Length: 565
Image (tube, rainbow, N blue to C red):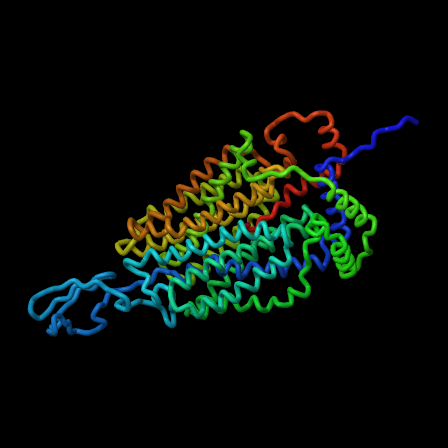
């Protein structure tokens, strides 16, 4: 027999082969098993402190009715060592005009401690404590903006650290450091210290979200990721609902702060039982530790050790360390026409949906009615949206679903803003406006979840993580912008912010029409797949070589995670 040249698999072949073998290995450990389900539920609980801190400013910074009382209840006005009796006064929010017994009238501007606030029993917040009204009213939304700036920094920092040092250590650090920061916030003496600690807290909490999300995504087979994503979203919605109850029962913002940070101490046992990501250990050459984890999971799930699958994974992983794969950056998202078109549209859509979600969530406590009940209703419809999304992503086309919810959000927000508002509006119109705003929040929440799935299907495998991570950056930028848009209502009309949200959603829906349908379509693997460039014979052979690869590709498409990055 003549000599034959030995086939040397490419880096792409090795990555693809390792992915298939890892899925095979994970399947033999349980699909999923009890071990995976327990760890998954524990990781879902990590979303509670995350959600609490993301939306807590709806209560900490809630608009509070106030009046200016520079005399602090006294009927005597002193000027130039002379006392005058106040015979009447016209009280405003920032200034008060007093009428003296000598027929003079004087307009006084309130300073620190001169305001009287109308609050419910035991209720305090940072507005009443540090007089964040009138000339200082901009500080209230600024606190939220500073927090989300920290979240943006955390996304950039811990995305890298999670890949460099592993998911588990980053998850543990970012879970427990916010407890210390939260206790520090309880004792802060000033607004400055409050926003500084909140900024740092935002950095760490975004690290918690990234590491927890990746641990979940890497734990399950593609076919089970839709369910996992749906359950995580339900934990998110349940946490928003729980926050309404916590805030209602406690009322004092400092003790609410303790209530949302201290429960993380109950997770100290995570240090002993939380595993590292099996996929991460294999990819980074931690093969001995990975083998021990495989043995532990198999024993817990009462499965035999999958020797053949593990040896295949180990062999491929050891071979991969000798090669290097092509590196991509976020600039790759803009290099080719179709990819650039998709990326620019998705960047705007993620920005718009984030502005809408956080804007409405923070704004909703300022609407007509009891803010605790309204917030709870809003959280409940948000939960309903997440449950509905589980059905929609299984049976409905992506583009039509996105367009439908985008225009529903647009119409309801614009109508809510167009209805009469303010002190001159009737109770009927104010309640109707609140109802439309809540429906708008339902649509925006549903849209938020769908974007995670749709975006993961629009980007090819080789840059999917980069694409999702870049879109997450625009999401955090939306969180920074949303409080400032809400501030517009103080200087123009209360309806302006909600109308802005509606217009942004309408533009998002129009742009979605330009995107391709992905439901029940094979996931693109390379940039060539979405640019429509023809494959050569070798590439065709590679695509059809293994039917299981095609099957798992279709499963992975339906399994994109829904959870917020």
